[in-house]
Image (cartoon, rainbow, N blue to C red; front, side):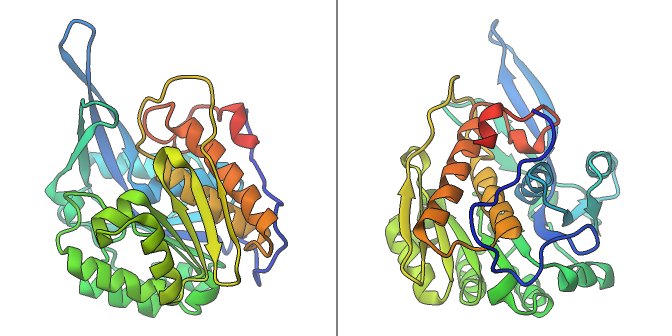
Length: 326
């Protein structure tokens, strides 16, 4: 199915909707992933594609009909050129920070279920400069979505705090930690919690809760609300998702069963986060449980389609599965 998918499930509460001149801004990582696959004869083959959680979220938002811009770190190298070309092809504004370390790469090796990913030095060295162009984009944006950000870097944390004015109305968070990318877990948690305390919305997965807080997802979700997050979307793999907020909404939805085998769970969390961001940007935060349930149903459908392709289908060039419009 070509075109965009719009969600009018909740009543608008945002002061402004995104436009091409004032798009949603996504801040985080943009890398190239090389996926090694086992051939039928037992040998290995590989293919690569542009990825990174922030890039996945950006591409998903664009395909969901949301004007969007990306701020990420890339190198002045062929992979950086490839990322620029991919975004340009889809008409997405890109305000990069050019890193001397180069463009990050992830290597995925075959394993049962999701491949095992390792990240190179350039991926670990990702940093945002928050230059004049980037800050201007952030200041004009009705919403700022964070995914794959180096919260464990004190300077990055402080610059993000300074750049995002009125975070309680605009800041949408996904910690999205990755083994091999988070160098200082204690600092990551401390700084992430500082942003959660004034965020409008936070997405948290069961893997996030385990890696960051060594706690069950329900406990971590309650902690996010106690810290000050207005809305929390908690996802637990094949158990589906739950939307809770400080006003008393608490609804859950199971996963959606679609045809086809589960191929790769990478990108499912990005798809869920992007779907929630799109719903908020297009229709506002949910005021009632029924609104939150419709957002959850949409997110679970998109996630179910995502795990049936390699990477994130919303970030790819293929047509969207028809179920994504449910």
